Image (cartoon, rainbow, N blue to C red; front, side, top):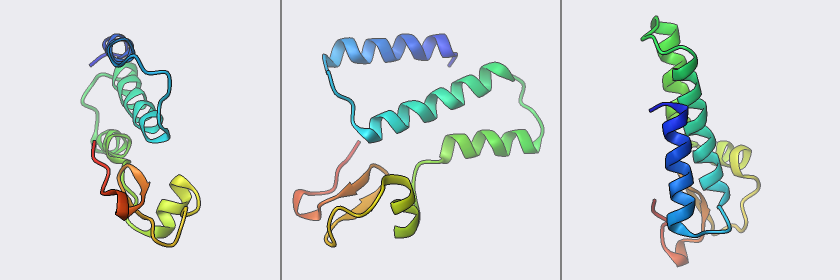
Length: 99
């Protein structure tokens, strides 16, 4: 997908969803996709192993593995009961958020 394709897709998302607010998690995901799209557009070749590792890092940078990494990514835990998944902190009493 080119940056232009993504920009049109993103515009369509906002038009269809008729939303005025975007969550922190949605902003992070949009930034990740933009980083990946622009990286591919700047250097569309397959590249060497290091280039592929860099692309994979951009693409896969979505999920902290430890609570410390979650705090670094999303800030302090809202309450001791909160848990995290790839979308951020959530209250288990309200169920696990899904994409």
